[in-house]
Length: 329
Ligand SMILES: NC(=O)c1ccc[n+]([C@@H]2O[C@H](COP(=O)([O-])OP(=O)(O)OC[C@H]3O[C@@H](n4cnc5c(N)ncnc54)[C@H](OP(=O)(O)O)[C@@H]3O)[C@@H](O)[C@H]2O)c1
Image 1 (cartoon, rainbow, N blue to C red):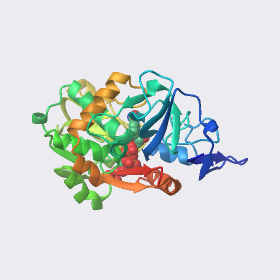
Image 2 (cartoon, helix red, strand yellow):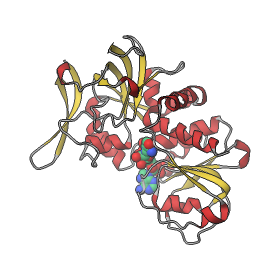
Image 3 (cartoon, rainbow, N blue to C red):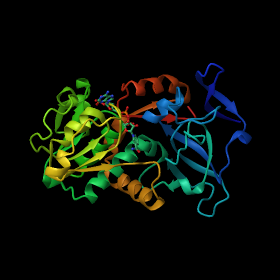
C-alpha cells in the first residue's frame, strides 16, 4: 500500500481531495515505477487538486504535475533500481496519475536523470515552475540576450516561475527588475537578486500608447493579459519577451506596433512537450546557474494533507516561492 492525494468527483460534479491508502495495482500503466520522495505545488496543481480546470479527464485522480525520487522497478534499459530521476510535464498529474503519492508509474521517455548537484528535494524546489523559468532564460539567450544590454523584467516575480527566474538571471549577471503586487515580498525579491521592485499597478493598465520608452532588454512574463500587452510597448529594439504564464489573464489586449516598429519578439514557452535533450540541458543549467542558497531560501515544506488548502492558495496568487511536498511526511 502507498499514500496518495486522491481526488474524487461526486454526482453533483464537485471534487474532493483526501489522502488515501492505495494498493500498487491501482498505479497506471508505465515502464518505470518510482518511489517518489518529493513533489511540489504549481498553478496547474491548484486546478487539478480542485475543480480540474478542464485538465483532468478521469476520476479518481492523483494530481502532482512533477516529482523527484528513486527508481524502484524498470522495464526500460535506460533506468535501473536506485537511479535518481525527475519528471515534469507530459500531462502527468493531469491526464496521467501524478506525483502527489508515495509511488508513481510512468513512461521511461518522460523521465530525466537527476543532474549532479541536485538532490530530489532541491529538484522539486525548482519543479516545473523553475524548469520553465530556465527554458525561458534559454529562449531569451537563443535570441541574443546578454547581461550588458540592460535590465530584464520578471513579472509575477514572487511566484514560483518568477522567483527562480530572478535568482538565475541575477546570478548570471543580469540587472533584474521584479514586478510584484505584494509589496511585502520586496525584501525576499531583493535577497534573490532583484535590483529594482516594480509595483504591479504600474503595469496593470491596458495599452494607452502602443509604444512607451524603450526600457527592458528582456522579459520573462508569468502574468499575461494587460501586463504583457503593456510590457511589449516598453521593450528595447529587437528585444524578446518570453511568455510563460497567465496568472493575470489569458487575453492579450495589445497592438502589433511593437513588433513592426521595434522588432520585438514574443517567444512562447511550453514546458510540457520538450524533447529529452532540451530537458537534460535545462536541468544541467539549473544545477550550474541557480545558487543553491537562494533556492533553499524559497522553500516552504508541506505534506500531502496540506495540499487541498495550498491548492486554493496558489489559485488566489497567495503562495510565495516554492512549496516542496514531502510525500512521506
Ligand atoms: N508555459 C508553461 O509551460 C508553464 C509552466 C509553469 C507555469 N506556467 C504558468 O506560469 C504562471 C506562473 O506559474 P507559477 O507556478 O509561478 O504560479 P504562482 O507561484 O502562483 O505565481 C504567479 C504570480 O503571478 C502574480 N499574480 C497572481 N495573480 C495576478 C494577477 N491577477 N495579476 C498580476 N499578477 C498576478 C503573483 O506574483 P506577485 O504577487 O509577485 O505579483 C503570483 O505569485 C501560471 O500562469 C502558470 O500556469 C506555465
